[in-house]
Image 1 (spheres, rainbow, N blue to C red):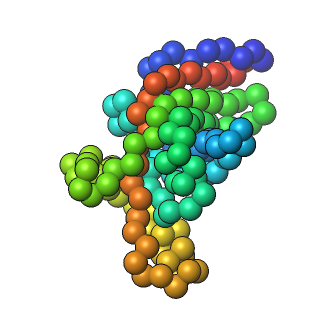
Image 2: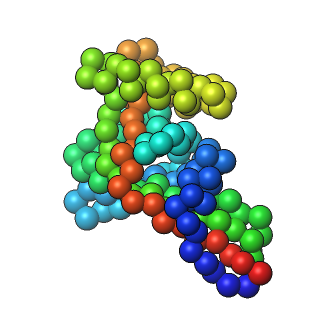
Length: 147
């Protein structure tokens, strides 16, 4: 087995196939990584969240990364890392992009509503609003195994 670099097109194809990745952000020299569901389209990755630590951190430091992979076994895997910038898609500032994010994420079921509903229930605050954001991709690299 050897590890080889993926082409940009292979990276794009992986991002189109998978829905789960790990989002990395940082603040005050402290990294923070969380699993997220996402949708990839063009030069953007769309994500939904409730307000919490990651949103607060990305608002203060918009530089972030996303790692996504397909793992069939120890010697059979693909992995892509995207670096980019956080852009919050507010209803007033970016209505068309917010609608596109909702459309993109909704294509893969309503999975994003469960964490949102749980957050609202946990804090008993029905006024909590969803946060749609995108990653403006700056770079994309990937690796895979080859027999």
